[in-house]
Structures are given as C-alpha cells and as structure tokens.
Length: 412
Ligand SMILES: Nc1ncnc2c1ncn2[C@@H]1O[C@H](COP(=O)(O)OP(=O)(O)OP(=O)(O)O)[C@@H](O)[C@H]1O
Ligand SMILES: O=C(O)[C@H](O)COP(=O)(O)O
Image (cartoon, rainbow, N blue to C red):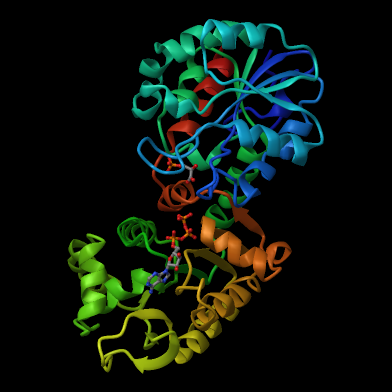
C-alpha cells in the first residue's frame, strides 16, 4: 500500500491510502495535570489535530502515554478523550483498556469516521522498557493489536527518543508512516540544523543541565554552532566551571540537582571552545522576591540566582540580532516570577528575529505563547527531551523505525 512521493527517507500520510483504512495512531497527549486530574495545557492535544482531521474517512484508534509510573500525573486518558472531542469538534470515544478482549471488541466494532482513544500505554508494564523494535514487536500489546489494523502512524515526535513498545513495536508488523506533526517536526528541525545557516546561535537554559551540557558538547563537536549562549541553571554550571563563586545557596542547588559532576565537563568544554561558549557577565538574584542585579564574581549575600542580568540580556540580544539561525531551548530564568522573566522574554524576542528560528521545550513554548510570539518563530518543537535529543544528533528510535520500514518497503 506504500507509494513514495517525496525524497524523504520515511513515508508520510501522503504516501498511503487512508480512506476506509483501519489506522493505529501513536500520539503524545501527555499533558501537565493539576491535583484534581484536569489538563492544564491543551497544546499537546492540539498539536495532533491536523493529523486527526486528515483521517476523517478512516477508522482511527489512538494510543498515548500520560506521566510515568509513580508520578502524580500518571493517570487515565479519560479526560484527554473529552478534551480531544472538544478541540477536534468530533467525538473521540475512550476505552479504559489497551488490548484486552473488551478493547479489541471495541476496536472491531468501529466504523468509518470513528475515533477511539485507548488507555494510557504506560499502564502496560512492557511499555516502560526501552528495547529494540524486534523485541517490542513480540509483546502482547503489539501481537494482540496489530492484526486489527492496516496501517500504523507515528505522530508522536516528542516521545520518539524512547524505544518503547507503542512507539517502535508496530513498525515491524504494520505498514508505518509519519503523521503530519511528526513530519513537520523533522522537516522544521532539519531545515534549521542541516542548512548550515551562519551565524548559528544556540540559547540553552532551563533546569536540565546534564542533558544540555551533553547537547552543547555534541553540537560543538559537529561544528554546527557559532555561539552557545548559556542561561538558566545551565549558566550556573558554566559559571562554576569558570571558578566563579556562585554563593553557597547556588552551589547547593547544583549539588541537590546532582549536577556537580557536570561542572568538570563544562570546564573541559570551556577550554576546548573558549570563543563559542558564552557565560553570563551578570545575574539577577532573588532578594525576598525583589530583583537584585549582581556582576558574576561579586555574588554576595548568598541569594539564589533567578535570571540572567541586564548587561547579559543586552549582550546576548546583540549576538542574536546578527544570527541567521537561532535555536532556543529552556528559559533563561524563573520566568514564573514576574521580576525574573525579563531575560527569557527579551532573548525570545531577539531570537525570533533571526532568519530561521527554532524553539522547543514545554516551559519555553508556554512563554512564547504568553508573549504572542508563536507566529514569529520559524519552527516550534513540541518535543522537550525529544528535541534535545534531536539537536544533539543522537538517533531517535521512533524515527529510525519509520525509516527502517520505509527502506524495507522500497526494496520490496
Ligand atoms: N536560574 C534558575 N534557577 C532555578 N530555576 C530556573 C532557573 N532558570 C530557569 N529555571 C526554571 O527552569 C524551568 C524550565 O526548565 P526546563 O528545562 O524544564 O525547560 P523547558 O522549556 O520546559 O524544557 P523541557 O520541555 O525539556 O522540560 C522553569 O520552571 C524555570 O523556572
Ligand atoms: O513530555 C514529554 O517530553 C514526552 O511526552 C515524553 O515523556 P517522557 O519523558 O515521560 O518519556
């Protein structure tokens, strides 16, 4: 049923017949939830609407995860089906199981135009193991479900850095293509990363210092970046790597978040790429909720760093204004507090001006939304960990599995 229509090394929904086909779609509806089990941000669900709208003449079953075992937001997808129904304007029914006889009967009874959302895939233990597609294809989830479908669509870029059952398993046993969101993510990120626009400036911050230090190392090794502007907690690690006394409270923050080992890695990177990695000259400290500017090296009073400082904001903005490619991941400060959102806001405005601008990460997208800057960015990635993995050039098992299906089908 596959008919390749583009030069891509994976198939898309344009390459296959969809009408009246029984289609299993892996989406990522994983959303922030409040204590009462309500979805706090509908962005993840909205991002799949183009794919779902293109499937209006198919028989559609959706799979998604929500949270991780043991976490507060590890819960059923019942409310997700309701919200998807509202957003799509068509009923998305919910089945409180994944592959039981009951769930399979519900799938079998679907008719053209129906959409059914199965239960949280991570309620099935083997979903939580990262294994090769061959192994995942043998699981009960895949074996019980795949005979009920003609096609598998992976639209979940943001979980495709995981080799989980519902992400890679079906690609071994069903014709498999990328959904519209997946295709947009790959195309949007590649356009920025592979077209070699220069100067290429990366603004990397937020709290995931370990992941970001690795991304910085990978990007610099590949030679893709002209400048890396460090912000957020990532900047604190690099300041410490320069031997700066960040104050006990900030050192403790880094220790408590298990980032102390990143300081020596950051130090090596600074030695290897002295002109490329830029560390803030000043910061904003949180003095009882008030913003207190301080030069790096003169951080007194043991106050927590909560934003980059005003001189750094001006310098970084100037670098960004010259950039032809900008990539922004992770807020520059604790933007949730009004006094400490300046760095994130100003740098996002500056990044949006470059010829090709990419931004990713849950909190980052929320600020872009609040600032009304969505249309100013060339590509907004729904991926948090996934876009970091993609940026670092590491293989993404979910995408590799689609490519592997495509290469088998072209040969066949
Ligand atoms: N200096 C800082 N100290 C403490 N927290 C900070 C600092 N700078 C930024 N943050 C916090 O970082 C958090 C966001 O970081 P995070 O790495 O999760 O970014 P993100 O855009 O959501 O990416 P992802 O989707 O990968 O999680 C925000 O809650 C913000 O308050
Ligand atoms: O929110 C995300 O980044 C994705 O849904 C992946 O979730 P995970 O990090 O729990 O696999």
